[in-house]
Image (cartoon, rainbow, N blue to C red; front, side, top):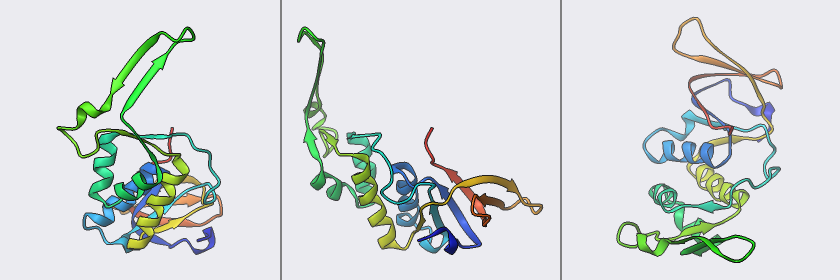
Length: 172
């Protein structure tokens, strides 16, 4: 969807369509918030990002399993139960065995998966529920409206969205 079709208002605006923002929108929809009340925006065009993260840990997989995404992610990634860090002389500095988590989680491993694929899976799930996601939308300002119960978010395009709640998930 292009910036020209931004809605004029929403109950919840999530700024950032990376893993955190997409998981937020998806989780809200899965836990009872009407998808029509959720808008996710991102300044980057879809697929026009670099992968900044390649590992998904057990606890994150558990959270994503609760919203129906873990199996899709696992099917596209590489499950790893061991991690070893060595120095240049091949001396072992750190050795971790994630299989020791087996009694505590159904995900006793870490998943190696590029961030762009993680985002594709999360966006696909969010959109399937009806969450609206807009790319190429740069937020440039936010102010509280006189009523005090809403915010007005300004975009580089000149558009604005009125929202009751804004979630900042746009990274560092």
